[in-house]
Image (cartoon, rainbow, N blue to C red):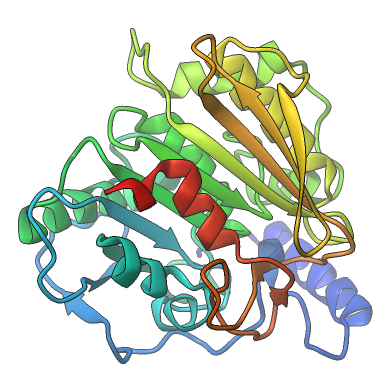
Length: 339
């Protein structure tokens, strides 16, 4: 990642702390993502796509599309966490199951240790997370390529990610509200919370307590001037997460409700499976604009629920938590089950 000497010392210090605090499942990786297998060159069911653009962020593009995918289908882009790969996220998250069930294409970008020592998306680097720059632009180019390959509907492009991938998702939704109709941030952080490695750790462990307007202004300043239409946002957070503090979910809620011009009091709440509380924030038309899923007792990771039931998905792995199928509820929130 080309860190300075102080930044490397800071990284080593934090890494030592994280090793001491690790559970038997394994140590938590840099920027609080999952400790899983390292990036792989290919994955069963995935197709690597070359030549998708100038690729200034030096990322790899993988896709999955069901057989006989109709023209005009939606597109979901899914960002893995640190030390993970496209294959790992494909295998555990449950998204391929709903691509088959509902009929949409998947893009799974992949970074590597060449970009970041722990294969994290560089969500905390302005040169990689802003509009038209670095990794963010590479992901946008993957969207364009996938829409061209599969004849997708540009009005139904969605973005999701876990931990560092979730933080990058928040930044991408802010930078490209004209590209993404919706997003889902799992164990992630508010858009533009950090602008350096050091402030990334601050955001993770001691999230800034900004006002909703201050958080909203960070999104508005990242978006194209005059933006009036915003993505619908789902926020997933475990209450026992010690890597990305649960307070980040509150700050994310404040940020995106403010962007939508709605209050921070939920329109309604629901009890779901897996100890999950759903808080819904409707826009002025009564349509859900922001949803917050708080999973009681869940640590850092992505909520999955292995099984063959309609509302089940995914498989358990390191930091894939057997609680509730987040991909199912997110897909329904976006309306992917309606096509």
